Length: 125
Picture 1 (tube, one colour):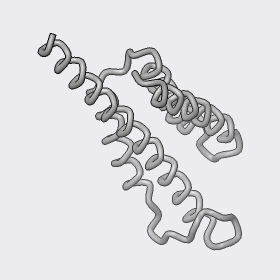
Picture 2: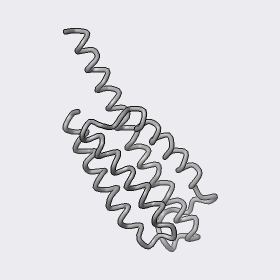
Picture 3: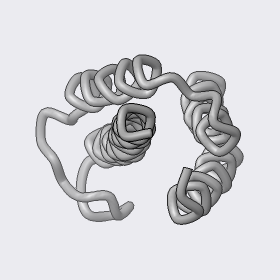
Picture 4: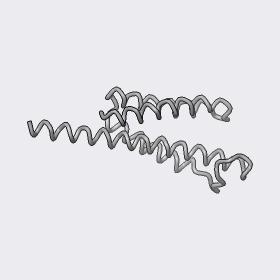
């Protein structure tokens, strides 16, 4: 893997761990601990070249679906005090899931492209 993508995955692994830690005051913290730590583990697997394309793709799709289902009836932003706290919390949660999905999609595309390049190199040699 190119160093850029390993660095990117490392940064997001750390950000997902921090995001998990920040869930301590959430009404359902264990659910979000699991989600953010799972995303961090997937990033670590990518760093070591152990993340399969299918798992990254499945995770991206799952997080997109989760983000859609978590989306509030009325999006009122993400800042406390700007609207109904439940809508704000659901908006934050869904945006978090969309961020994870985006990262997983990037990693999946990188895995696919790396395999394609490796396959082309084998054909040429």
